[in-house]
Image 1 (cartoon, one colour):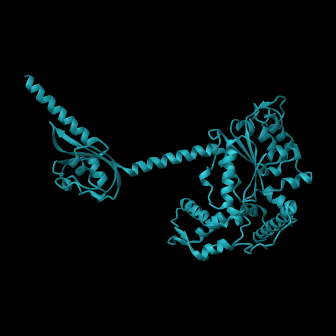
Image 2 (tube, helix red, strand yellow):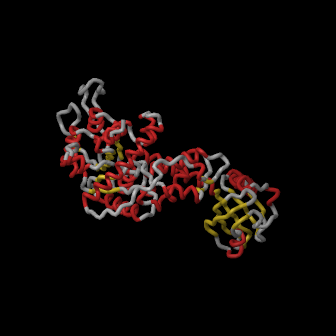
Image 3 (tube, one colour):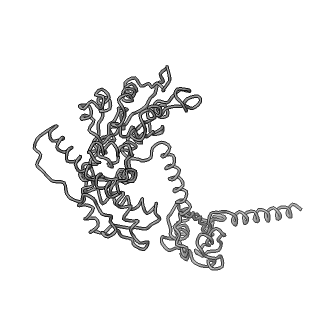
Length: 463
């Protein structure tokens, strides 16, 4: 009786093992002591593309396209083999495999291997990367690795970015329009100890004075018509323990400048319509393409605020000052637009690259990105290389006059500023005319706010 029960239990145990073997999602293959396949599960058939009847009796190399047989290594050493990368056939998939010896009563009877599909691991990695990207979008949009270039000029800026990240001092990013000020501000935040807290971006030129004030500092209930019940937190409060990026800082009014100065000095804000102060711990990064020292002299910008902002100034180089970075930037934009447009562009021709290298890029990196995007749109779906005929017409494709400026200090800076102002003025005027004097379309093409366009047109006397 006991013997019968033992036989039934053994049979149940064997059936359970077979069920587990068939149901497991990992691909399993078993060979005998001669290295011949004697058992595979359905997951193995699905992964390799080989039917059970075709593999049984075949040697251990039958399903391997690239790599050595783990089974034969186990049979020769009688030791397990850890994670090993293989390419299997006929599916052509890349797998990570482990194998171990099958020893019964001290005798080697064969080898068992487990195969993991690398594509599944890649899908998981992609999902993790997407999750990280979404998380970054809630805090900061870019990261330091997004700064493309190996020129001396850009490497100097990278060093300054790293230094700025180590201290909580206010940073002033100066550079022409299109040099990537938001990218560098994001990078400072991403490298700093505040990286896990909010990164709040404010375009000071995109909001009216009253709206900018209420957005920055918040407001109390009933402070003005349309104010929300209970009031509203300002962006400085939202950025508490994090970073606030004030883009186009030169555009704010003198009244708002005074309130901003109080934040920098006292680390506190007062909501619109409020009668009490709120402490905030915010790192301020400001950016401008204007000459703030000139605005100070003209009485358009507070001198005390300028000195508070200019504690750690970082000047971003124009693209024409680091042309050796253009090929690297083009490659990164091709990757970006391939993803956005569903294309498969692989390169740019030498002739097209030569044209782009000769251009002076008054719109800087933003203009280059625009040109590459438009070039790819101009290409047929079967074309893989950007040729010169795909390039849009480049405006101001003449080299700026090269002069030997020997004068030092402010005089040299003034001359350079005049040259840049002339180039920017001509560029805006040319775009404006080509777009039939449509200000909204002109602002979009230039990548600036409509308010900034009005400011620049008034500055350069463009009618």
